[in-house]
Image 1: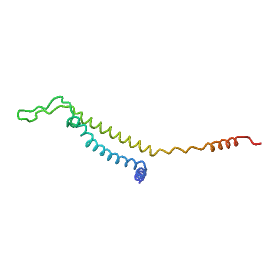
Image 2: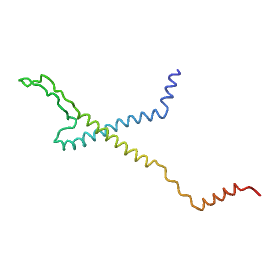
Image 3: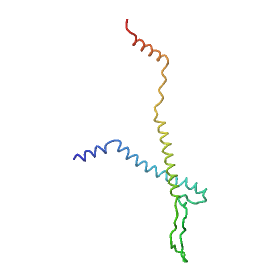
Image 4: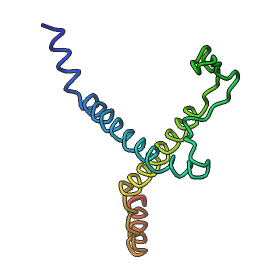
Length: 137
């Protein structure tokens, strides 16, 4: 029975639940940014590349070989770097959006600057402290 009790204590800790919520929200947020990249950013980049999708970028080392009937005999040998470039763009956009959200959150969460203490109050405190430190008559 001790294992079940320990497991309940582990699960009931606030940081475990917070972590689970963070992972779920992070996964959903990743889908939103991926949709942004796939639906808006990449088509804009595609306009500059004359309609070629970034994920299709590749360096062909050896082209596919076809027989006389047009059937592929040997597959193409290529370095497909486009998907890597697209993943880097996804990562950078996700990192940028998270940075901006955290920056805004920290700005809202930051404590308000302490109100300035009037000079009269500071002088009265100094006088009080001096009177405390003076030896008695």
